[in-house]
Length: 487
Ligand SMILES: Cc1cc2nc3c(=O)[nH]c(=O)nc-3n(C[C@H](O)[C@H](O)[C@H](O)COP(=O)(O)OP(=O)(O)OC[C@H]3O[C@@H](n4cnc5c(N)ncnc54)[C@H](O)[C@@H]3O)c2cc1C
Image 1 (cartoon, rainbow, N blue to C red):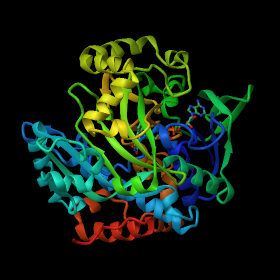
Image 2 (image 1 turned 135 degrees about the horizontal axis):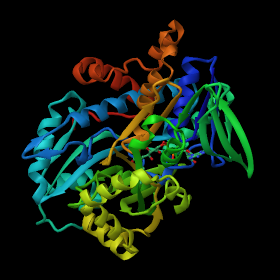
Image 3 (image 1 turned 180 degrees about the vertical axis):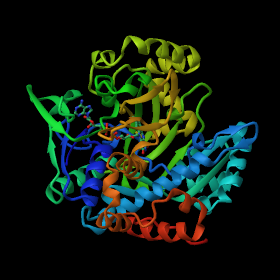
Image 4 (image 1 turned 30 degrees about the vertical axis):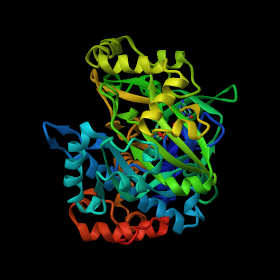
């Protein structure tokens, strides 16, 4: 059976690697617009590199009238644990020699000011009662918080009342480097083919029932055929779905959100001093993906601080692509849905438009209120982040991701942006289960699956503390993540 994957980002590359590990006889080709793998949203500075496991992101634990919901946080934490199992397997196989070249331990902290202390206290109480977050600590003590995240506290007036939580075993992940490792392994050891510089323009069913893929490689029109197609093309998945003639295509449209970060180079010593990712609280009306955070980043052995993201209204499908591409993905029947989103989410649209015109000075002011004194301490430069295309489904805006699989199981795609790269192995495993179910009836594939994922059942991880701890400790050891002992 031949499988074509569109997009060599972390999703498409993980899909290909997993599929070939489980079913080596599959014939897999990836078609990629750019000239290397992981060069889109997955590349290091197009995203924030947070290994999302709900340690510190308040938007994963929504509060409604003093009742906090932790379900989403539990799911994401379990998914990240499954992701770490896959990455630990890649280390075992020698795909990656040194885990530090893609994953580095950082504290995951949340910091809030006086008006949100009650919420953080409640979050801590609920979360630390679960085995996933049993090592979470909470403090309202200025000096203790300063010892966790010095750059946010050093020049803050002592009278400002703050509260924070910390988990020591969080991570910074270079998803671009990880994707490149996987792509090299998939090509050199598993026999996956990757055609770079190939922009897929349209996919449709041929009279024989196979997928016909029309693309342009370096200016020349080319055609590929596939029994099964997986579109892991980020924002580029929307126009392909629209042109596919699949019955569910009309239910979906894309809502693009651009972003920028402030970035500064720091020394290894400064990185050692901070070694954290600190998440704050989003402003009223701001989308969940614009929660401010100050992140240590480790990329190619160098150290950086990243602050942001500053979301913006940018009507393109992917960074580097034009407005026309986005426009051509909109159909007449999408207009009522888009209008509905604009009206129903007017504060969000207003927020995005106002953020679009924010200059460097305002960005630095925002950094200054998050971490007093920091804007002058380092040489900050604004950089453009990747582009998120959120899902509009049946006229409603959604913030998560969705796997879509055609009824005949020959077309699968991933739409949406978040929590994204962090949970990619788990999401791609589910996608494979839906798209290529026959693989999972084979003895050898099941045995391999158990080796790659000793425990991929999210409910088991959520409900069986001992099983979770056994897996957590084993994968953390391989990935170089350690829980410090009691002081
Ligand atoms: C500002 C920002 C911050 C983020 N922060 C985090 C974070 O901290 N942690 C986290 O886990 N996630 C984060 N994410 C999300 C994460 O970046 C994505 O979930 C992840 O990179 C998606 O991977 P992908 O493979 O789907 O997309 P991509 O990496 O964008 O890959 C898609 C590939 O498809 C190719 N392509 C597109 N269209 C075509 C076509 N027609 N023909 C051929 N090729 C095509 C593209 O060139 C690209 O290489 C963030 C995203 C953004 C934008």
